[in-house]
Amino acid sequence: HVQDWLVSREVNSEDNGQIYVCCLYFITTVFTTVGFGDISASNHKERIFVIFMECTACCFFGIILGELQGIYEAHSANS
Image (cartoon, rainbow, N blue to C red):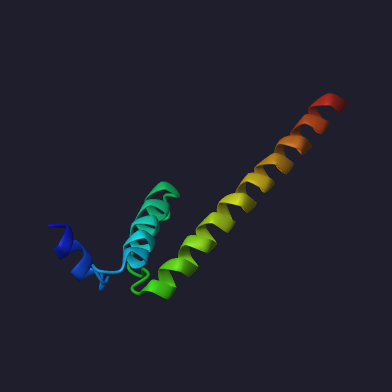
């Protein structure tokens, strides 16, 4: 069944790097709740790009939440 899954995603089953990237893409897409939708990465380069963008977006989201929390605390302290 794993071979069928790899073939359906056009991943070379002999290349451990491609297998790792495909699995990492699956995990980051699921855990960031982005989902696969109608448009999803279909080759090795696209998967690497999406993994990078999802991780970058998570970092920015954390920074924005931290800034908002700081603004809220400053506003609460003034009230």
